[in-house]
Length: 159
Figure 1 (cartoon, rainbow, N blue to C red):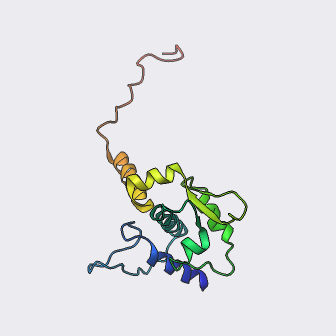
Figure 2 (cartoon, rainbow, N blue to C red; figure 1 turned 180 degrees about the horizontal axis):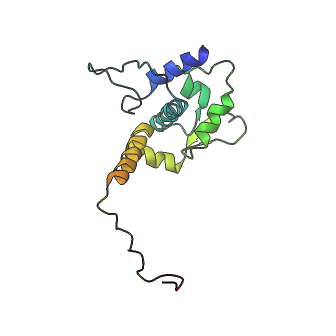
Figure 3 (cartoon, rainbow, N blue to C red; figure 1 turned 90 degrees about the vertical axis):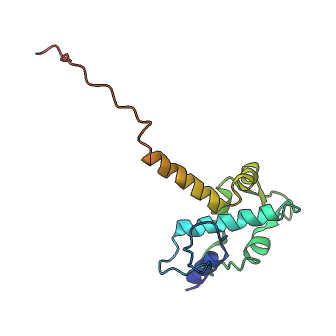
């Protein structure tokens, strides 16, 4: 039950232009009948974390729980370990853990994360552009050259 509540909060706190949530014709987010997949929830968590780190550029690092999760009203379910979320965040290469005495649980933006935010504005926009490039690459058949025809002569010398 608590994990459903966390997913609902992730849905509502994700940026408006990430494209993961269906938009109601009135302009507001519409609650869909389909629950968020794990991949979508991870994308929203990464997006919120990147946005907080980027928008708080006056601070070198932020506490993951107190500065990122709590202000965005994202609660970790009781049975869910925080390490699983931490691993997702740090394995992207866009954010890294801060090492030092008294710095446990703090994140900072990497150079790649800063460049991604400068270029796309959010992780959701990056995923949309990446998906659009994959779709364009799959549908573009003009650049495909046909394979050469097979040789007319027998290969083994038998006629």
